Length: 321
Image (cartoon, rainbow, N blue to C red; front, side):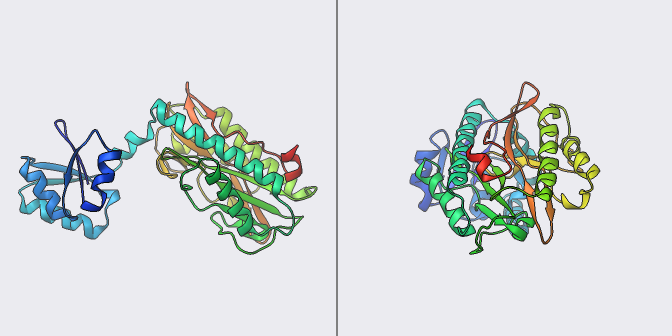
């Protein structure tokens, strides 16, 4: 547990993680303690604290009850807080952006590697493993999320899991991957087609790509997440696919692959410079598949600057070219 006040910065950890904490958090006062909220409340009382705010989003209901009860026994007033830490994390420092950009470059290279290797008869699981192995072999820490390779009808599921299904010509193939460098993640999606794409794929792909290009070009600092989402959603709605884009346009990326800000209908998150987030419009059609094009961007001088730069071609053959 981390305790920060105007006077102290304390990291309380147990025996198992104490030596690791000394190495990874050298700027904090370290306290070795038994796990649990009772001991943490006593730690606060020993240092004369009378008031404590805590991250309510990060605790289960049972944990928060135990924390409040332990604080009450030590005569400490508690205040659940929401979004306070997340709003600080949403603004990235220069070094953080450099780490994310390195992770983005690695993801770019991985998807190009897969485009070269992709062929009919390769299973989704095999393709996903090839991506993960490439990322780890080339410097990524543990990948920030389970890699998605979803083909045909499976591509209509935004969070599909790779299966033994074989890749085949004549169907969309969504690949969603990310790398992690010095703790910081990237997020990238490309959609492929083996062989010459048919008219349906070309039509839907161009709608999604146009929606992303508009959002990339027109998102500005000061917009809300809802306003940014609307830039892409308006084009998809006008094309007749309003019921086929069921998630938000994007999400923040950093130490976690999903964090603030949120770009979605109803989001009041305000976009500012040095925020890093995804732009990922999509269309999903049950029984046929889906198309998602996703890039990680940083707000730089009031505009979105792409960090992931992998080509956005309609087919693996075009991608290789």
